[in-house]
Image 1: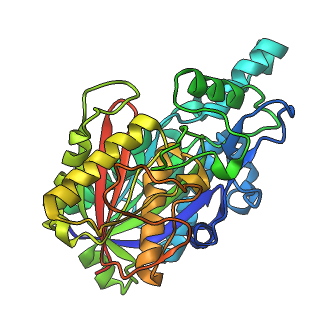
Image 2 (image 1 turned 180 degrees about the vertical axis):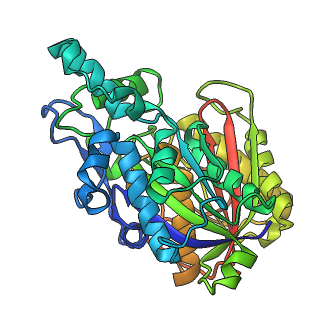
Length: 416
């Protein structure tokens, strides 16, 4: 596989734009914050969208009224990616695929609709509710915005959704079914002014299910690979890429930002929320991506790990990385980082955000460190980027996303 990446876009807890996201990561900024609309005694934290995002910068009021916030941030990230690619007004209607990953879809509209019904009655429920909540509506809105009639799919594989979407989009191009693909992932933008119930409910669920322990310090709320890690803080955002066949990109003289070279995806078939403890299926997903690319583990320069900061999740990924790279290839020098200490766990968009950060590091030679983590898990046998960004010369990057329900995906990206 050799699929060109020619555009990137993001709306994240660290700002609007892929470059803004990556520069904020290198500056050590943290987008996790206490929720200002909750009472002081409420410990809930969230990687909320940055205050600079305004949907009116990206779409008209008619679209805003008819869409859930998750579709709005997807449209905004898509517009950025197409602008960078130089394809805003040059898409072939029949030869452009749209593949979007989301785990929940229009969660704001759903919870707000229930809240409106409970507090004000049936007449208060938005008549557009159903077309706002369906997960496919982000992809559909992108197709409507750009008058596209090629393949359009929505992938929902929990935290692996954006990598599975990207891999599927790359396969469309590889198979000759599309020349261009718009792809990425979105996780649940919330509107605090009119969605008072959603975040307390999800925070309580994560705590009661053992996925997180509430923290009072946003900068220590998520501790990937830390011996004292306590679990997940939810985040929100969208990250999108424009993919093209090499021939299409070359023919129009496009600047190629990087290349998708390999994709692996599988199910671990173990448990709804915990990975198979040995990490063997996560290792297998990485090996499938390497085999697809024809790239040996000895030639991978760095990994941006899934690294959620959950006790069981990180333990399995550590074993998988140890097995593939240290035991399998003698690579105790493998450089590994993760982003979730900065952004929170942005769910379906997390894998695509990792790719954006990795591509930025390839071009600019700086890889962000794992935010918050200070006491590294003693089972780690690779080189985790701690305390400050690392100067790097990256040619080959591997990105992992391991979702609830055992949805394991991995992608290899190269600079040339």
